[in-house]
Image (cartoon, rainbow, N blue to C red; front, side, top):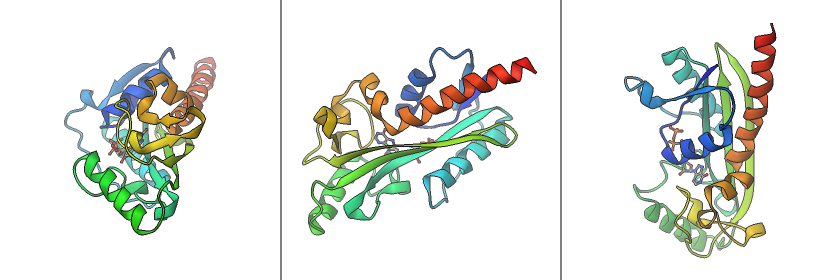
Length: 199
Ligand code: ITT
């Protein structure tokens, strides 16, 4: 079995590879398909965007394809940056963080609860599996840590008393939104492959 992991985000890809490691599957990335461009993420929800990406890359490559849409939803900001996490205010994460702290101060929301969400879609000719993972934390008083990517430095995870950027990759995926969603995919693929080959 061959599977395309359709993401342009290296941080996601590094984590997904570890979670799916050991399955008897040959993994492909978008590097094998340099002519296939990105698609605009016009959905209002993580699931809608995940479907848009999976459908696009599966149609363009003809491969069994998994795509995911993820992001940070902050309670005091009514769920922002949400599906706009990668496009939110500014080029750098320093700029994104300072805008978040500015907006939180303005609305009295410092230390707000927040969730990281990851919706994934697996498509062959049609959607064959979808799921979602969520991890809850609070927005840290200030960015901390150098590991991970994206918003990890401002996401404080109370059970470990540190931000996700202060965890190793393995510790992060053991509790993260992406870890939850892709472990479910892993179980699905193992069973599905077995059933498919038995027929
Ligand atoms: P693809 O669409 O190609 O997968 P992308 O980076 O554009 O790559 P999204 O549209 O799903 O992906 O945006 C997700 C953004 O949410 C990501 O760029 C980060 O800013 C943030 N994000 C998602 N998961 C995260 C995580 O585990 N840690 C930190 N930030 C995360």
